[in-house]
Image 1 (cartoon, rainbow, N blue to C red):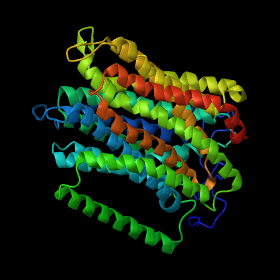
Image 2: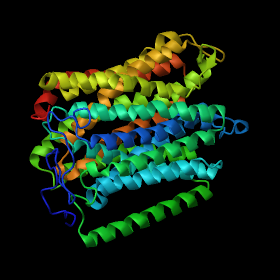
Image 3: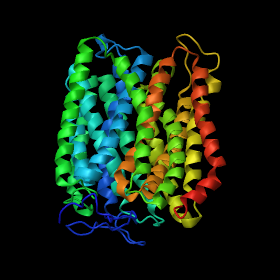
Image 4: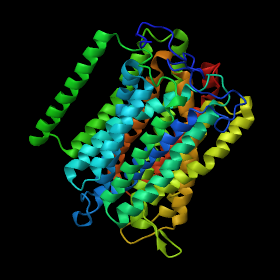
Length: 515
């Protein structure tokens, strides 16, 4: 069976159905009362397992990245100022999520989801192995490979999870909560391992652990492929052969041109690290506008699907506001802990990067309760927009709860109790589960059929914009009073959360019949 062409109006699982077929038979799915994997389709297990290891490697590395950037050369780091280190780390995250657009397009038009995820995972593993080499050049090469690989993997794994369920399956939000719990298992374990190795032994040993973790992820993903649809199949809306060849050549030529231009500008002194981060911020602002317009105007999108893009835009903006706070947990909150928090517990000095692990722990522990609540409530559960709104509010409160204890603190040598950081992480972690699991589920339901993976990529562009803006705002960390910094950042999320609650009746109408 050949890949479907771009003219084929009936892709597999057009309604996000639970049983997309493939040449090798339908994907294994559980019925409404099935018990294959906690009452969910068996395909949820290999996809969730892959995310455990992908997040183990990605967030494990990211947890020590800002500390590696800011550590002195004598300590094996790059010697950046704290604000600059946080800005570069945020710029890297921006690049990761910007490239998710390319990853979604490649899956929808060229490779299909299964192959895109596999090739992305291989690129990520190669990137982490490169970072394990103690050389500055290998660090930047590794970050580039990880960015490209994550852009290929992230939107397409989420799209594959969405295809396990029909659009009206009441298990869908619960399934995404379990999927998101697996993400946070990796987010919990990764910083513990890389933090111990990176801070106590050598930064590159921490990066090596991330490489090994991603290798495990690839192995279990391939081992569980029989439960996934499309493993022998190309893209559902594949380009015609001639257009496919042109696309391959254009992509290759574009990569060469970009590399040559960057090298030339760098050698001429016109491209600095700070300038590159600034450029990523501008791209993160322009890309979602352009891509949303492409999707809106596409002839492949039906009028009914186009109508659902309006509420999707509101949910997308809510994600920007929340992730603006969330990703600072891996930069600013880690730096605050490293400089001004006594992390000794029963005489043991815990690595500062374990704050990122605590965030994952909160999400892991809260996700089963949230998923169970949605499953028990069934049709009585809150509408998706309300779930997202409460998630954004909790994210903002996570920063605002720090403000009273930071009042009057200035200069060096002051400290606050670890309890306040834990409380902030508690708010942000629960909000993370509410927003991201619901947002991924809602996106997979609201997405036009011809843009199933690309709509998830557009969702990840909200993370790109959040980190792109953050790359600029974190430059003020350390320059203005800490209490003012956390007040301004937390207030943004709270205001947006309240605004989403205010337009909830309109969202309910425009998202109908999707709950």
